[in-house]
Amino acid sequence: PYPIFQSFVDSVIGSIYTSVFIRVTRKSWPNYGDLLAYPLTLSCMAVFYMASIVCNNSSLISLSLSVNQLIKGCNPLPVMLFSFLLLRIMPSLPACATVAVIVVGTLIAIPMKDWSASAPGLVMALLSLLATAGRQSLAQYMMRRDDQAE
Image (cartoon, rainbow, N blue to C red; front, side):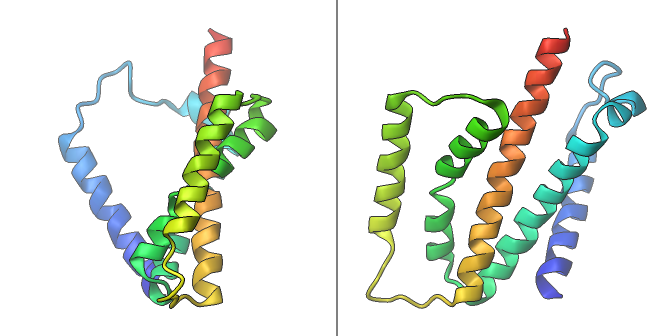
């Protein structure tokens, strides 16, 4: 319950700060029609966003912050995979090589001598990683649909 409560409080405070500091114009304010136009995609993005935060906070209970951040460093790999599956974007060879170097560097950086990670912590960190990548790919998908509509 603690990670979920912490995520809730973080979201409420973030919403308050955002509403205080953001300047909303009539053109940039989303309308009810946008919500009706993309109900499934927006719902999936909201679930991915919530799952990312909750799983990340849950993973920190049984996983060190450094290992958690190293796992998050592999984010380009699932983003590239989801972009291929959802958007049919074939990554270039230099992009694949760059992602491979990032992932290999991340794996090398994991401290194997001081390995203090539990299986539930690793699973939650990986779920958070996949949820973050899925949300990014869905956002790219929605922007692509908007560009094609204009």
